[in-house]
Length: 172
Image (tube, rainbow, N blue to C red; front, side, top):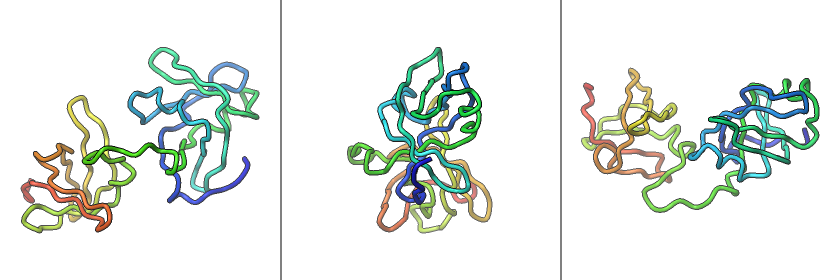
């Protein structure tokens, strides 16, 4: 652990899910698409509730359907085991710019969600992927699962106003 950073400048890209072997390698569950893209970032921040600590990725590889990674200074199974459960983040500044009408999940979380009629449904708590499309979990007076289908359901995303407008029946 080198320095601690505040969460707003860090975007979560995955999680350390286990250990691999006896030489300090960890198993990684990646949220990137494709999953191997997490290996494109050499500076990782590992975090738990207590904060973020900087680490450098020294090696990484695809292993079957998973990802394996070796961090500098992590040379034993015990050291790797201490990292299990940590979120893996990267600096927002390292993320590539996206084309118009594409968004990072981290930017959508917390947005206020309204229908095209101006009825507030709640805020985006988190998103998850399905085989067909991404789904927003919107929490308000109740929880709603709303598909992120650009222009069919999601009509407008205004990050500066903290608003996402959906064509969605408020009773659904």
